[in-house]
Amino acid sequence: MRGLGSRRKGHIGRRTQVAAAGAFALLCVAGASGQATAAAPEPTSGAAAVVSWQADLSKVGSDDVNVRYAAGDLKVHAKGFHPASDGAGAGYGTELLSAHGLDTPVNRVRADLDAAVPSGADVVVDVRGRASDGTWTEWRTAADGTAAVLPRPVTQVQARITFDDPTGRAAVHGLRLSADNVARPRSATTATAAFSSTVYATREGLVGGTTANGHVIKSNDHFVALPSRRGLSPNGSSAYSVEVCGPARCETAPVWDVGPWNIHDDYWNPSATREQFKDLAQGLPEAQAAYQNGYNGGKDGSGRTVSNPAGIDLADGTFYNIGLNNNGWVTVTYLWTGDGGGSTGTSFPTWGSGVNIRADATTDSSVVATLSGPTQVNVECQKHGQTVTYDGYTNDAWSYLPDYKGYISNIFIAVDDQWLPGVPECA
Image (cartoon, rainbow, N blue to C red):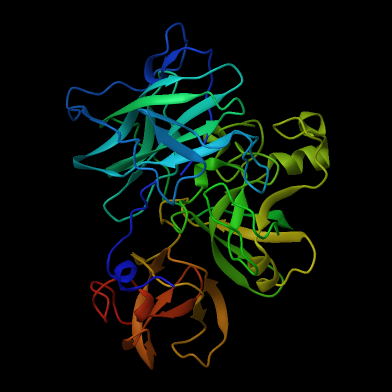
């Protein structure tokens, strides 16, 4: 359970993970010579000035995985380590760097990585941005001379460095980040809701193991794994969460691991922006296509024969809570996707774990969903209901969440006001 600090202030995780390439030489990720890459759009004459900063690699902490900083270099700690899900190979490690605040909004980020990367190892820099409403963009790779163009302007930028280094000899000497604002084509499309799809779920288990974001799996745990690092939340964060609905009920759970099968299959994204397997339809996991239709020769992205069509792994607590006793089909909503067009209301952060959403503004009404940890929710309206006291707070106000078709006590909305500002009373 998060305490008062998490309730009152939006938490920015300090750091998390992913992959790259190269001969044993000094790399400049943003400008590798001889590489033919698709150029990012150039700034218009009115574009904001470029802002640059040097990342501090020395602050290795609890939200980093299997990395160490010594003698001016960032390296993997143990070259044999891999996450429990085995979504990545040996030599996996990741550092989530401090978020960097900016005075003016930006939407394009370039990473200049100074690193020695031997043959057989990869080092990748991913970036994401935090908008003024507190939401994060998905992670995007900034590498090989191509800047990452984010989907919307942001005022904070965060980077993560991920090693896939079974040699144990890759060394990152430094990282410099640059950001500016670039004109983007205007879209004539209407606003969209968060994307949903029906996929096959498997139980992760692996109690005692470590996930891709550094979480140590415990009995009756609540989180999910998706087969792309683009939607991986930092340890303890619910920045990227899903609503997963099974035979009994729905649960909202954070994405804390990578898998099943693939690590670059963000199938929830449109085909044009999908990291790999762009010829597959949105919502169709590569593993499902391989298992059912022989796609990619029936293999996953690593060349393994796919033995089930899984597109999501569920921790034990989530698996059984939604009513599964065996692996099976579930409906998943990827809550960070879309642009809010399918919902009405205002976005707010929550705090606390195991927070129930109920059919009405009373603890006697049925539970329609559960928030396993802090996340963002869309509030349509609020009303007075049963008075609730929890963790030293008392409030009779409840907020209606249209995405869940239920009410949450305002105690668990992470703002100071008992009655949410700017939110109308429910009719």
